[in-house]
Length: 292
Image 1 (cartoon, rainbow, N blue to C red):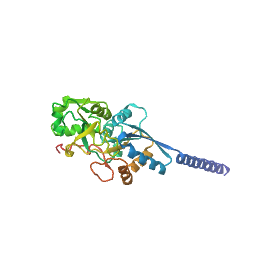
Image 2 (image 1 turned 90 degrees about the vertical axis):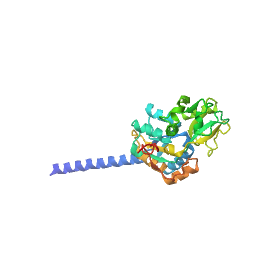
Image 3 (image 1 turned 90 degrees about the horizontal axis):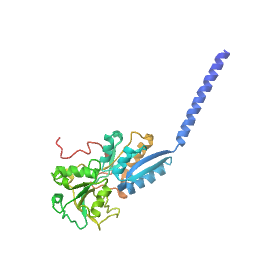
Image 4 (image 1 turned 120 degrees about the vertical axis):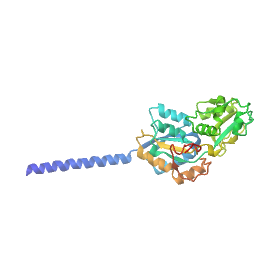
């Protein structure tokens, strides 16, 4: 009988120790500060910063760190750097899709907000005499500066549009591919190219009063029905060790109140889409002119 009592006491002590350890672990987890690392494109930082401040007011135990750069540079960092972000945001969506195809992004987490128009930019004095996309064939147009169309969303959309218009193969000899959207824009600013493909407002954002209107101008817009609808697209990396916190932040970032707030702080929505988030993936990047 005494042996039985001793055994029972030992078991009760062990169970109590387990409960105490679990309680302490839960308490430690509740006190632990979570750190999220987000990659943010330069063009949406003003609006993103508003969300960042509000999220951290509500979630003081979640610290947000970020990298602010061109989308091409950020995508390269994801591939090459040992430290991966928890969340990647692409202006236009294609950079996110490239990372998804390479196995970095969880496709179930991809979500989109805002929207862009595609524009053809020229030097202020317009030496190529460009008023329409067809004018890219003008003999005065010697160089068309673009970023890598297989990676950069604006140039991916631009190539799609020009292919649908039957112009891409005709202007290919004039193309100068640079390392990123910023350097391709500098080609027209510094007089080394007669045209440049960018999203409207990037880098010439009249809403943010950051224009280079004395050095560059918008020649024309691309026809909407010749390319997919570019949006800001965000997704969580498969390597994230803060999945729950990342999901919470992404939900907050793409909630209707947050999108409404960002629209007041320079977020572009050129297609006048509802202030709600939508899905993102291959279907949203499909060529509108492709045969079904």
